[in-house]
Amino acid sequence: MSPPKYVDLVVLAVAAVVFVVADFPLLGYFTALAVWVAQRGIQWLAQKRSTEALKNGNRQRAMGITAASTLGRVWFMCLVVLLVGLAERTAGLSSAILLAALFTISMGAAGMAYLLEPEPEGQSVQPR
Image (cartoon, rainbow, N blue to C red; front, side):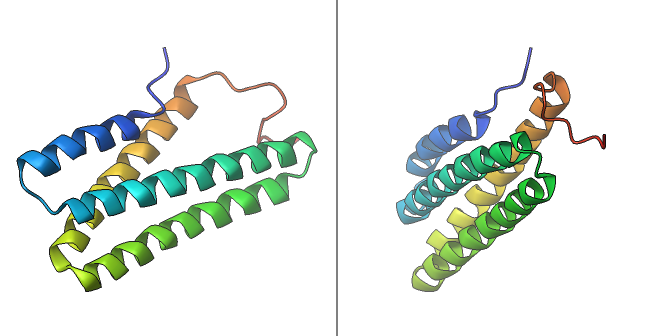
């Protein structure tokens, strides 16, 4: 049995209730929601391109895509949180905390999924 790959989206949905009940700034939640969904779309596209590169035998390109998209997504999230934080400090803080939690949960779930799922045929990273 593999761990849920989309547990971060469940946490994002639960966070909506927490933000409303605890009276946290909704600007912070909606900022985190928009940024998280956008970066997940970028992640999906990068994973698709990386898989295509691996299928074509171009491991260097696949690693470059993965590295660039991971760093780019983190910088994107940081920049948006900074801009929102400059506009409204409490919204920026709540957004930053939620995004940090989502990123940590997402990375943990991805690591667990990688360790527990069998490797797809032809996608080994082991040298030939």
